[in-house]
Image (cartoon, rainbow, N blue to C red; front, side, top):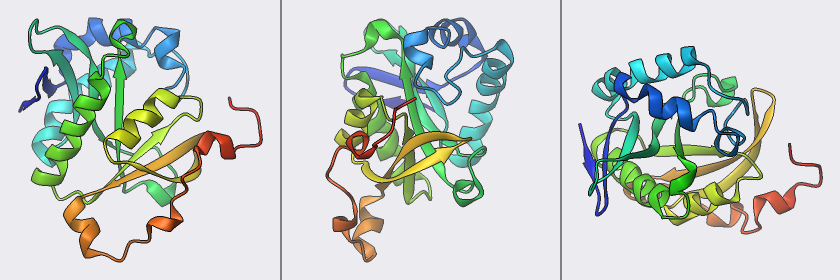
Amino acid sequence: MMIETDRLYLRPLHMGNESFISSMMRNPSVYKYILKQEPWPDSKIYRLLSSQQDLFVRTGYCLFGVEMKATRTLTGYCGLQPLEDFSGTFCNEVGASWAFHEKYWGAGLATESAAAVLDQAFKYTSLRNIKALIHPANRGSMRVARKVGFEFEDIVFRNNRLRLMYSAFDPAYRRSISFDPTRLTKTHPADMLNFRLA
């Protein structure tokens, strides 16, 4: 139940991670890009942490705590979750997400861990397409998404909040289907919006 990269260990989040997640998700610089844009209450943290190991056993994916190899320091999380609370159109989709403590921003940890998560998912699960729903002001996450193979697909609303939807396909599956890359815009998606970002 571990993914290893050059610098990182990724392990399913668990109940021993409460203090770190609570500290990270009460930082306005972090939670302003998360769905409800508010600090995470203890009840949400408990539900999240208590479900990840079982989710991994059932599906082969989950949210992983991202640790530095050299120090075993927890830096954030990265992984996949069912998009259970999305609109009916997307309720059967799986989405990628990542969040890191502010002091670890800019070190390439999100890119390194997200690439490893996608590789593991496409090799060892039945997933063929993974979504990423990103706040339109979060250009850092957009850069990460593009670096690891996501492509902008659409502008959508999740729980009445605007998000940019990116898709990543299993490379083998993508080669087997008729895929028209010209339908994916090369314009920065935030530049397509002619209204105030919130």
